[in-house]
Amino acid sequence: MKSCKPGGPPAGARVAPPCAAGAECAGTCSGAGRLESAARRRLAANARERRRMQGLNTAFDRLRRVVPQWGQDKKLSKYETLQMALSYIMALTRILAEAERFGSERDWVGLHCEHFGHDHYLQFPGAKLPGESELYSQRLFGFQPEPFQMAT
DNA sequence: TAGGCCATCTGGTCCT
DNA sequence: AGGACCAGATGGCCTA
Image 1 (cartoon, chains in turn cyan, green, brown):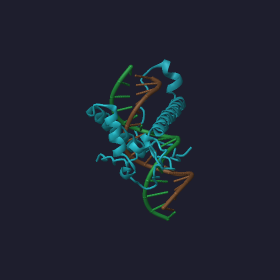
Image 2 (image 1 turned 60 degrees about the vertical axis):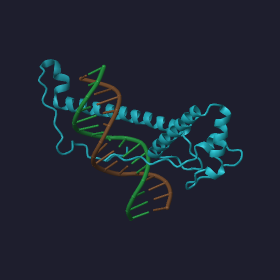
Image 3 (image 1 turned 90 degrees about the vertical axis):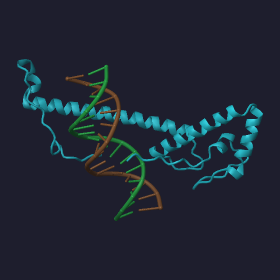
Image 4 (image 1 turned 30 degrees about the vertical axis):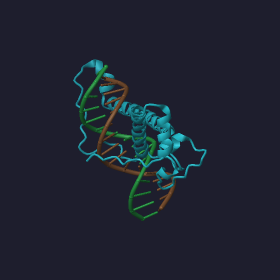
């Protein structure tokens, strides 16, 4: 339990109007019954919200695993994960576009070996230089993510 | 200690 | 009516 808010409704919160139903409402419309029912629904909503956020975090973890993280020993934040995913997708898109421009696979691979050699490997804080055995893809995507334009 | 990141609670809104 | 989604508020944890 992380929140320590007072139990009562915040200032300005609307109070539920009295129930207009008749006898069939007796169980839940008595003062205590209504409060109990509202509290139960709130607790259930809290639990659903927790599950929803856990699902969201699971999705973020899956995204972190497929997004490049060269030389970063620290886990990417959610914001950084989204940034990196965006840059990664853009890089892949660029590569596909290049592949279409070059007729043969040989031409294309030659271009990338030339293009993404050590001299062209973009450096950023914490990044390690790729050794000869590093994956080709690691060379391709060793770049600094472009920052998002924050909506204002 | 300040700042960043995160989990949780909560009330509002929309949809089924 | 109830569930999903969202955004704001709040407090805990961690690091520079």
